[in-house]
Amino acid sequence: MSAASVARPAHGAGGGDSGDGERLSKRVAQILGCSRREAEQTIEGGWVRVDGQVVEIPQQRVLTQTVTVDPDASLMALGEVTLILHKPPNVLDGLQDDSGPAAAPPGPSPGRGRQTRKAAIQSARALLKAANHSPRDASGQRPLLRHFKQLQASVPLEIAASGLVVFTQDWRVQRKLTEDMGQMEHELMVDVRGEVQAEALIPIERALRDPRQRLPVAKISISSASEARSILRLAVKGAHPGLAAFLCELAGLEIQALRRIRLGRVSLGDVAPGQWRYLAEFERF
Image (cartoon, rainbow, N blue to C red):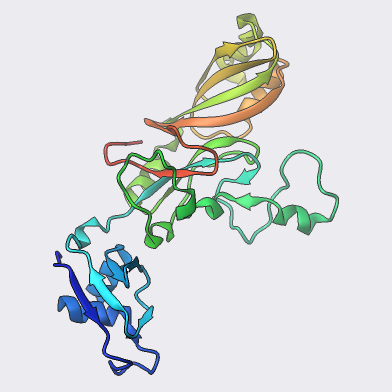
């Protein structure tokens, strides 16, 4: 559907709905000469302005305001979206039911009871809002209210870890992440205390080769090393929470931070902790 820009002021409180005016969707349907459902989709697509302000709620009531429909309005742009979030540490990954029990993050508790500790653990879903959209997102998408509805998550990440987590409305993306998870490579950066030499990784490499350990297919290497801190790169097939901690314990390494930077062929990109971006059209997991 394409519409010319049309401005139509309300004629008082008429329209037959109530003294509080009429529903915006009804007004837009009258302007465009379309069905109420198409009007609702046009509003949800961010194409409608009321007195110059974008309104995405079809149920909003209008009286004497001027309603304008963008001339480029099109229902073809109402496809499902996928969001790539940079989850901060000590935040749930979004797979858990927000109303259900959750383990407290590592570290000392505030000492005010279990309910207080649970309430203090934020869900990654709470970060999915327009205010946290990364300014470096190059997708060209503009955040809409409908983009934050019916989002599914399927790729776990430890509470203490940070990095890439996926939320999607697209059933094809969800199926890919679910069915191919065991063969999809996760790239994690592991910050450890002190300078790590190559020989320090020998116990880890030996364990990964040992069939008795039944560990997933993984590779580990040193990305950088300094006297105070070293960064290890861990590439592993499938999601295996706790694996990095287990491997570092074998080598006597103390983890200071853990973050996932890639999932399959999709990288986190330049997204700050707590912010998110859209999956671009050319990206495939």
